[in-house]
Image (cartoon, rainbow, N blue to C red; front, side, top):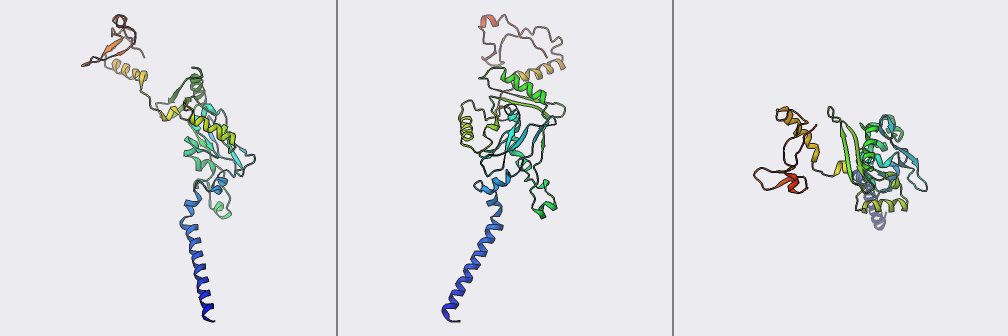
Length: 275
């Protein structure tokens, strides 16, 4: 073997070694990061390759799956009574990602959670089916809360949260204005425009006011005040007038709180405390 041939062989050997090192780096060191990269289309294709697991309310599924049309993502999410339940479910969109239960339990719902796969699945490479998320929401309470809010008018904003005091179970989560998460579950341009309009709306329908807005306790605290007054004997008859002025002067302050009616009328008014 002459000198030139030896040089060519060494260079080729170094190139093969560099290729092997690079392949090892990409597949083993950077493998997880590349697999979960938001720009990796194969990750999205794997997530939506089969029907998704469902979110359960009162023993019935309030979510579902249907085959996508004209997309390499095989399935997309569907919703039953989407506007009523969206403060609970959030959304799972092929383009916009996931929020609330859909986001917190995304791995479980899409079958990526390690608890759903067994030794046989690892050997065969079979993709586990998505699991179910069972909620404590009471369908009747949820419906009452949502209809109560929407009954206030089209421009109303508000939230209702109902808890079971003994256990802390959440029975209802309602928020208005609301939206249907099924309207942008896919990848079409129309669905993209729908999401953009909701996201830019000054009414902020995408914000779950039941979970992500801060409100003063307001009249809900009156229950605690009244209970303390009865427990300590300050009030014995809950139907008796309190003889407190409707605009109550705060101690050690010139500030008055309460009714906005004129002071002349407030001097004659009284507050009543009830449970």
